[in-house]
Length: 271
Length: 105
Image (cartoon, rainbow over all chains, first blue to last red; front, top):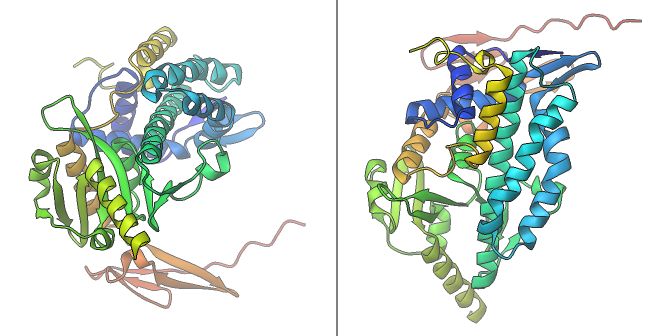
């Protein structure tokens, strides 16, 4: 077995992968390099007697396909997602090294295979944490009576839909901040709105926020305060408008967004 | 700084790797989950700006020819005419097609 790392994967990326595995924290510049490292590793491959297989395909075949459905079923059946999510993702994480070793894809005789292990852990945590957040949000929308259609997270084909939910005809995604950034690093924001959560500056408190494109905000109307990106973090929560080149985003508190969506829905029904 | 701190995962022994995995899982995975608001929005702005430096060109195979055009994400960032892409700094990128090698019998 031999591992081939992709062209462009530099020693700096290698250091990020090791530091990720060793639980270190990252500066802003390093975090961008970390995202880049794990994007590049999609194209790494393992050559065995039976042929070559990309890391992305191995992760899909040996980790996500066998473990994801059960993880999500148990998550959705739990009374409190927050209470069980950590132990459920750890149960799968503990199977990753034995699974890859048994398949002959991670071995002490090929140290570059350690990158496959790091890759699978990275994307498993992105998947597991992302869906734990999504299930929490979807439950909350249900409880709050916000009309929406969401993809079925228990159906692996539905999970591949390009967007997670539709609210009042607008398409949206629910993402943790790191995964949101991982995607926007290489793609424009394709959807109308995004639900995510951030830490409020200087505090351990996490807040849920919604990022809306301007046309969605115009449909639910309201006043905003224009802020610069650097001032945005301290201005939260509020209803804020940020402009980056030709992209305008409205950032508002999740509870405020729900209240506005409910108002528009009631007005539509009454019309 | 030691050599190990400058090195990648291959610098770890198998035992060190197994220990790292166990600590990683015990800590509930990476220290890269949700970000502080200021860091999140700063990185988002940086990625938006960086992405704008990419010019995307689409090619459509029509008969034995490739028809090039600018992707909608890159309108106004370059000019495309025939097999030539002209960048604002004057750089010209010209696509030359080679005939495919004969298929093996």
